[in-house]
Image (cartoon, protein in one colour):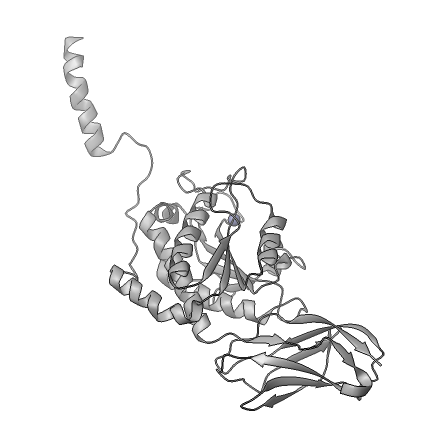
Length: 352
Ligand SMILES: [Zn+2]
């Protein structure tokens, strides 16, 4: 008895030092600090560099899961997906706010928000860009090796509901996020972007289907990877993840966004003979070799009218034998840097 009392503190100390008091596997995890993020002066100068493009832009962040929905976790139970999503989103909010963007979030704490509410809140707020943040899991639950970074856009390019600008943002964010984390993309996509129809055919992800703004869903990495799990619980690594998304967005915006508008959505067939859509390309320049113009999902011909004073894409309707009534118009153009216009789908009323 006397001997045990003497030995116990020594044993306890030994256990502490050797780390054998825990059964958890500890990998020697590795990550690099992006050169423009570390040290802090570099980070601030990069934020300043991108800030002209973020001014006043309304960015809605949607950290996936939370509250009662927090069952997704890593093999050792260290990384809870809901919590990692939130941490990355909060760091991203800091960077975006510092750059001059206006940021709103579906949740900024551990609480349950329905999928419908996530889209509804973004739509009601009038978000310019919607980013849903998640971490991935493989088809086989016992697979602790699969790990890559992927970014989703809605529908396939041949579908009416596809939005070109969402795919543009997906490409930029995916590239910089994967680079910052030191991950590659998955199989079957060279640039690491995927249609959500590959996961849920003809439906896709609810938050991408129901949100109006250009929208993406990032699966930063697999929280189910035994190795990745241990990086995802490192605070500094979550900041680097957020930085990857921030820089991708910054580069996307720097290439210029394009917005379309229509002055009057009641058009007289006999008097106007054409539909005129205004182009705001932030003076980057329009690539006149590309356009999509559709009336009630059917392709129609259009032409550009570009001068110093006006930038328009024009759809002649005098030779189309259109009856008066309500139609849906969809138009896409792109700028000379390859960025497509924000979603433009509008009901128009054709009068006699
Ligand atoms: Zn998720």
